[in-house]
Length: 89
Image 1 (cartoon, rainbow, N blue to C red):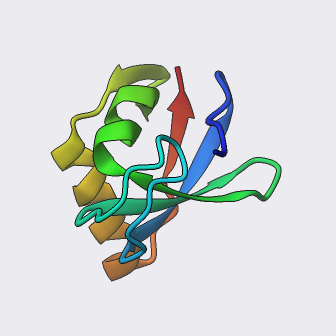
Image 2: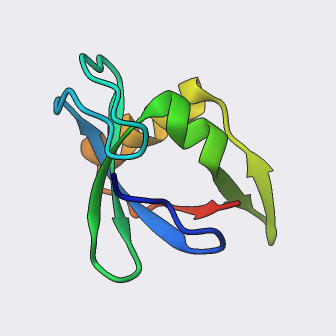
Image 3: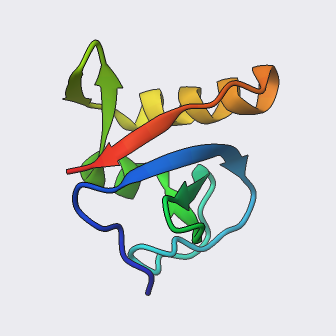
């Protein structure tokens, strides 16, 4: 299993169809997001794991993001091509 490292920033690559979470190993995922670490490692993480392990940056502070918010961020990245980062807690 690949790990999400505390304090590291992850670039959201968008929603994915890959059915396995690299964080917990769960299979048959229907909602997942692709992440890229600062070191260039690519991860496929289920939105539940992402919501537990990652925080959203807003106006200099980090806030907990729900699974629906993570899914929405992934969709926006794919649709609009924006760059969004989440921070590991």
